[in-house]
Image (cartoon, rainbow, N blue to C red; front, side):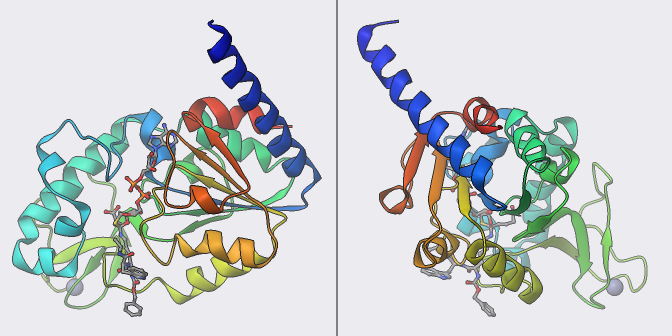
Length: 251
Ligand code: BJW
Ligand code: ZN
């Protein structure tokens, strides 16, 4: 290792020790996770370089009620592709590290991800801020069910009324479930530390939870491979792959 790299590693080591101490002393911890935490599981992030036919679409082109109304088959093909990737992989050491932290503290994981990996790795208090890719809802009768079929018939139809089914997720322009919104704001405001992991901090109201923490005097520690929109406002920034850094904060 060059002297430069050694110096950087030492700084990261010191920052990780500070986060580990904060977490060890905290009776309540809140986590806000984004697509980056599942990157090491091979799940593409939204705004990163994507090596697939979907890389030419922006989330704003597919994750909207308007896109679904215009071309439900296109939107469903995107979700079906993602369901297949998610089903074929699983949680990585970043998810597992958070689940292990629950042995030490009361922890609420607020995830923007729809993959279900936090629950799969053993986290018990998970608020799915943007819904779940494994839930589907009828656009006609409103019936919502869990459906883990991969692949799905496209477009899927409701067993009860024959209506068009949609993914049980939150698209741009749609509101967050009020119970989940309240649960998230309470968890963040009342925590002793907020860990923000692998999110670009571009999408609201999720990104605003980091500001809410600061406004309540809760220290914010961010884990990301690169600086995000939130980085200028956090207390501790840990650069690197969350699957490598997060396991190092477990007491
Ligand atoms: C790693 C890593 C590794 C990579 N380790 N890190 C305020 C200001 C401006 C706009 C708004 C505002 N408030 C609301 C809005 C409008 C809009 C919005 O935010 N627009 C912005 C784009 C400007 N918000 C909404 O519309 C929201 N609804 C709303 O406000 O409703 C109002 C309302 C009230 C009452 C009634 C009706 C309406 C809803 C937003 C829904 C977002 N939905 C999606 C799709 C979910 C389903 C699905 O998965 O398909 O959520 S879009 C997409 O973005 C998805 C994600 O959860 C979300 C966030 O993305 P995330 O996680 O940050 O991913 P990336 O890819 O952007 O970043 C990855 C990060 O990881 C990067 O930083 C990498 O560096 C890092 N990384 N590898 C660690 N190994
Ligand atoms: Zn129906």
